[in-house]
Length: 508
Image (cartoon, rainbow, N blue to C red; front, side, top):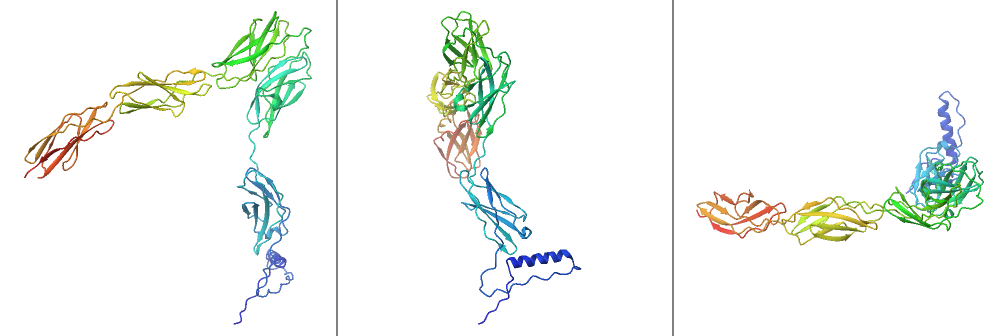
């Protein structure tokens, strides 16, 4: 059998020109003279290859972002005929479609940081999708850096045409510091490793007798942070003819919101004094006694690390180079009293729980739980202890204290709790049968630490509940048959065991 097909509409460059002519004709209006039509391509024979696709996009580039990339390309010829662009990432095949024919960029999200990607762009029009572009050069998305590091607590000690500067760094990883003196702008750049854990540096090129303030800027992977607040003014002086001896063996010991700094004074300390500086804070303590070998710095914050330097001073105003800094020490005090203490009663026991105590500068290592005269020490976690061997019905005061390297803190506010269990078994009740009426009587069982709140009588047509003050129950209108009645007592803890049944027979 012979088959036939209608001629296919031409595609490719000729079709594009025809479409342009059609658009121009429509815009010109009905009165315009029509331009000669573009030559029509001959119909493709049956089974021929598909017509040409749109032109290939050129000039594809990519810029990495955080988990994404921005892909750009050149605007193609006759871009107004484009209906969309498809941007595809490799590996993974993540893609984005842009519907604006004049677009020249798009953001591809959902990429994995640290993985290299290339990108292709393909244009589509009403007749189909063109070939993918040549891939872009590889780019590697990276996580956005954090905030630039910052500096605080800048202090300066004058020297001969110089100043020794100390500070505290805050925030992200630091690669270098820039120390700048004003006026004049003399500065020095020092690497983070050279500055040390208690960073300091010497800025030179200063003029003796001129007052200077100093600022410090930190730089890291996220860029340079803002300049610190300026130090207090310092005035460099020429080195004295007779140098001021420095102390030796500077060390520090942490206390509760304080630290004690010790040193060995010079051999001949006549006319000398000492200044203890808290590095990076601007806090200092003056010591007038030339024979002193220690000083206590108070008002520190528990849990924060501090380092100290000691400078020898002389009555003529000359000073030595600072000795130190000491190794960092962390002030700490005993933990605060635990809060949230609760005691859940059990049968001859209490289950004690509590919230974490405020550590006050050093991690809590243990808790001590006191119930009446009993005391037990438990680890810092899980903050739960079951205390057994208690007497039901006896009230106990419960307190908890916390311990860390600095000692044991105060006890929590006492909580009073009473161990208890469900009531004991009710003794076998008695029953009196009169016609179709049964009267039940029973005695109160042992309360087991919590008062009986009621009773439940079962075995009749339906169960009955009565209050704690009732121990007699009259059941009337019973059917003629045999019954087995049981009584159960309950209290705030729960229901006790049922009594031995009392069996009766109701006759007609």
